Every structure is written in structure tokens, then in C-alpha cells.
Length: 478
Image 1 (spheres, rainbow, N blue to C red):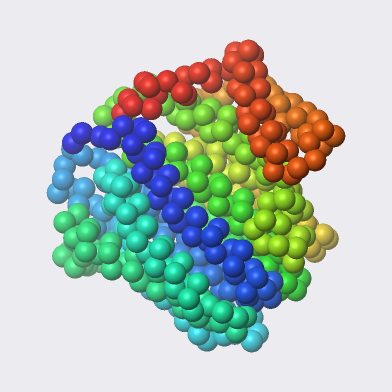
Image 2: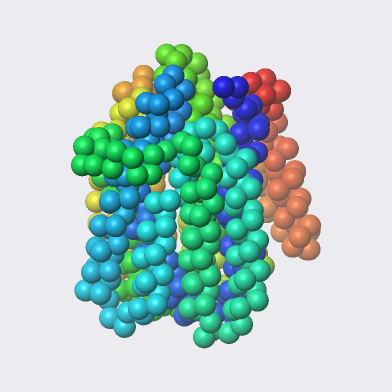
């Protein structure tokens, strides 16, 4: 099977991610003004619950099943293995819904039955999206087309039906309906790649468990951690402050998702290299991707930090002005979150799932300790600092694991050099523009465009191999 080029894979998956991310970004200014901080905090709380259990119930499925789908040597074996993982996923999802309902009822007061039911339904429908099938087959174009249709319907529906703060339930029902559409389309187009009911027995489920359980437990732990900040914040601060915090963090996560498109689009192809025994090529590809993401994310994080107030004001108006501090504190998460994804993928490719499990445990334990301490001490500011600290801690662990297991070394001096060049390039222009350019748009344009030119020129001057990432060979070669 001929593989699409790196550029084709990246653009297709980037388009898929941008579609998923651009819809919330388009709607965010509208929702912040129509729903307000309190109602936005409520829907984000239930959405956070649902997303937490989706991650938990996914149980390593995306990583492990995508890896299995990347093995082209035996079609029937691949179909059988992926089917067993799906059936394990389905059962774990049904059990997870029960836990979600019981946990919510026991842990929180004034539960909204409608929103809780919608959150549970989204968890159930997540088992039928089959992202791993299309990713494993490098069909990122299909994912993008599917998402485009559904997101257009989603945005139009919200703009038409959500008119006041009292429509917050309507918004959440529309959000649930998008999950239903995703699942219906996926069921139709994945029929030839999976057995839905054939061999549905305990042995098949156990096989799926054996394939996935280490990554599964890690996903359960990281799934709890992924929304732990919001779940803990609800206990310590008002819903308005939760809404303020969510806006800043969501902006960071939106852009992390966009940049992660590159590493995710490379994962099936890198898995294929492993199955073919091309380990040296795999190592070289990993190093290139890791350095490319580092060079790409540092300018974005710096610009997010220095222009946080402007970004928040444009998106949500003055009622969310406090979110700019959250965005400033959390902007560096963009760097470490995307690098961590690449490192986890590398461990998964080498079937070192035990180290992914340790990563999940580290994230959750550190998350509970740091978040509880800093949120209790500094509220939403403490939450932002906590999340960044945890990502840095996990990045250090994952780099050590990849170095030890996959025999890949990291040039730490080079990474420090890239960071200092980025800070010099953008901060110097930022302070210059404050004194000589009084129009905000012109100031941002000047700092961003001229800063990027200086940044890349200095990288080349100080022997960082930046030119290789703009060559035809890097983007067109499979």
C-alpha cells in the first residue's frame, strides 16, 4: 500500500485538528458573551466529566489499536486484533458510564440530570468513533472530511438555538448530538476493517485486555489527571472563576492540539518502520520530529505569553480579562505537552507500554499533590502553575525513559540554545515595539514576523539544523 507523503499526512491531520479546534474558537467569543462565566463554568464542568471518562474508558485503545492497524503484513490478523481491542473498549466504556453516574451523584450536590445524561451518552458514543482505524490506515483525509461536515452543523446549530444564559442545556445537547453523528458516520465507513459482533466472547475481550492493559491503566490515570484541575477547582473556587480558568487553559490546549497534528500523523508511519525492522530510520525520524516541534512551539509559547491580554480581550471581551494571567502562566504547556506526546508515541512504537503506565501514575500522583496544594494556596493561578509543573516533570521522566529504552540521546545544550534564541528574538522586539509602535495590531505583526525571521536566522547562525525542515525531501519523502 503506497503511503501518502509526510506533507499530505500532516496537512490532512492538521486540517482535521483545525476543524475540531476552530469550531470552539469561533464559538468561544459568542458563548462567553451569551452564557457568561457561570453558565460556561457549568457546561465545562459536565463536559470535563465526560471527557475525563472518555479518556479513561478509551483505555489505551487509540495508541495500541493504531499500532496494530499499522502492521500491513497480515490483513486478517490485523482485523482480528483490532476487533478484540474494540470489544474490550466497548465493555470498559459501559462499565465506565456506571462509575461516572455513581461518582457524580456521590461527589457533587445539585446535579443536573439532563447534563449528566448527555455526558454519559457522549462517553458511550466515543467507543464507536474508530479514530484508530482511519489513523492506522493513514486515512487522515477521511477524518478531516467527516469532521468538517459535523462541525459546520454544530456551529450553525449553536448560533441558531443558543440565545441566552438559560440555553446552556441546549448547547450541551447539541454538543452530544455531534458525538452521535461522528459515531454513525464512523460505523458506516469502518465496516470492512473490524468485526462488530463476530467472535464476541470472553476470550476475545481478554485478548484485547492483554494487548491494551498497560496503556489502558496509564490512560485511566492520565484521563483522571487531564481534567483533575477543573474537578478540584470546583471544590475550592466559584463557578465564575472556573470559567475564567477554563478559557485560558482551553486556548493553550487548542494550540497544543494543532501542533500535535504533526506527531500524531507520523505515528502510523513510524510504527510501520518498527514492524519492518528499520530501527535506524525510525530513530532518525524521531529526532527530526522532536527537534522540529521544539523549534516550532517555542515562538508560539512566547507570543502567547507576551500578548495574552490582547488575545483574551479579542476572543471574549473584558468580562474574562483575568484569563490573560492564566494564559500567560500556562503558555509554556504548549511546548511540553506536544513534546510529551512524541515521547509517549516513541515508547508505544517500541512496545514499552510499562513506561507509559509509569508516566500515567506519575502524572496523576504529582497532579493530585501539586494541584491540591497550589489550588488551596493560590486558586486558579495555582492551578495554572500546577499543570505546567506537572508537564515539565513528565517531560523529564519521558526523556530519560526514551534514552534508556530506545537508545536515543538528547542534545540538551541544543534545546537550551533554541530557548534562549527564541526569548531574545521576540522579547527584544516586543520591548522595542512598545516604545515606537503605538498601534497594537502593528506591534504584534512587527514582533511576530520580524521576530520569526531573526529567530530562524540565529538558529542557523548557531548551528541548529533548521534548514532541513523546509526542504522538499523532509516533507515529500514518506
